[in-house]
Amino acid sequence: MEAPVFEISRIESLAGLRLSGELDLCSSPGLSAALADIGRDDSIHIDLSELTFLDSAGMNEILSLAGSRSGRGRVALMNPSEPVRRALEIGGLDAHPAIEILLPASSMQSRFTVGAAYETATSEAAS
Image (cartoon, rainbow, N blue to C red; front, side, top):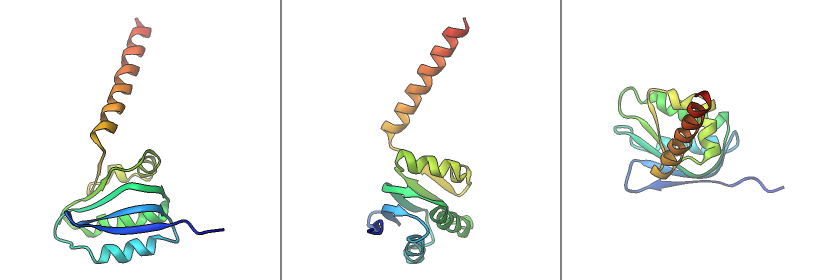
């Protein structure tokens, strides 16, 4: 059986990394090493758009980074897929004061539309 692929690349325009593949117990040490090479003075951006899986070991690396910031900027998690975003919510990273989850505008719009439709349907049913 072939091991899942995990790749890390630098985001040249920002202080950050782009992750792809599966971030888990086996691959999280690679993220730790890559984060050690990132500048620590500003916010750090991590593009999760190509990340397909995230487990607690990966979340722990992100939490460790956020905890080490000490007011020197936030950790911005950009464009997580729906399963990865759900894992971040379950893990409580969406509520961490030093972590910001940035969703694409189209994703936020669709969530609002569904919520508004649900709210309208439940209001009409209650009448």
